[in-house]
Image (cartoon, rainbow, N blue to C red; front, side, top):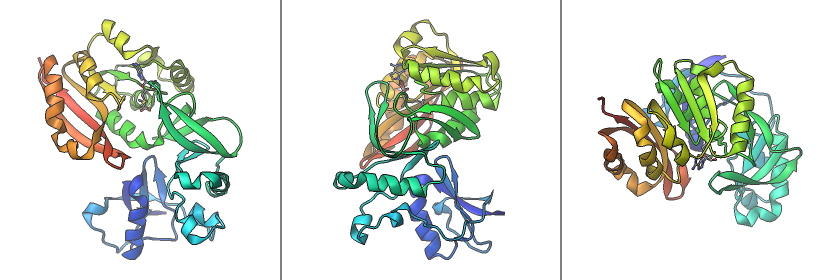
Length: 340
Ligand SMILES: C[S@@+](CC[C@H](N)C(=O)[O-])C[C@H]1O[C@@H](n2cnc3c(N)ncnc32)[C@H](O)[C@@H]1O
């Protein structure tokens, strides 16, 4: 059923749900839609919501299945105060669910795993996410319920990606970013996706069909192998080329392109400066970095100063993608190199 919707970032989901319930604006007979790292809440036709709560648009909603729990924590037969300690949020990657746990709940992690396995439709395996490590940002995961491997197929922006959560980086929280960058690619552009992982930027750009060429580079051979498997299921032809290489080596022989994506947030501006000469005059650079929240306002100046060693640059946008830690955010920077 088509209905007005309030669309918000997923991390704002619970706040939004509470606000809408309190305002009597939420249609509880329709199911909230998950759209990558955003959620769409069904609104009553006559409900008015403040602009700052999110984007209002129209969406097709499914009717909610009658009964059934609305929060996996209600499946935990624990005292209320203990249940409140369990994280409300979790990530879904294909048929795998990942959850971060506070240390006090470690002894009870298997009960949380079983609750999530029962709660999330289509879930096969549940793991505790112990974070990413090393230069290749491989995730450490511990199985707490379900069975099988960490290999899965994840749907995002209408595409299906081969993912192995232990062997190559992937985050379901970047879906909107992948689509946003792809939407900026102009007809005939040459694109580099450096530190491409399993290729969500590159494949989304290829699917959109405007780029003339896309070279997707990563030092992790397993990420490149997964990207090749994803590509084998599509027909993008020679437009997209996966390359197993370190960025430091790749830059030595590469020629400048119209758009360069660099998603290595821990290195941030350091690597952005390294690859800036590979952006042709008039071209664009998208890079990601983890920035202390109180430094975000000054980041434009820092970026423009660092990039200025390689031509004249203007930072077009600095946007927060999602919170990274209690005091820092993952930030997307879009910069443009002045034309010749
Ligand atoms: C944060 S992940 C980004 C993956 C992908 N762009 C995405 O959006 O899902 C960073 C990736 O950079 C790769 N990487 C790290 N250091 C690298 C280097 N020096 N050269 C090439 N790739 C590198 C890692 O293997 C990892 O896949």
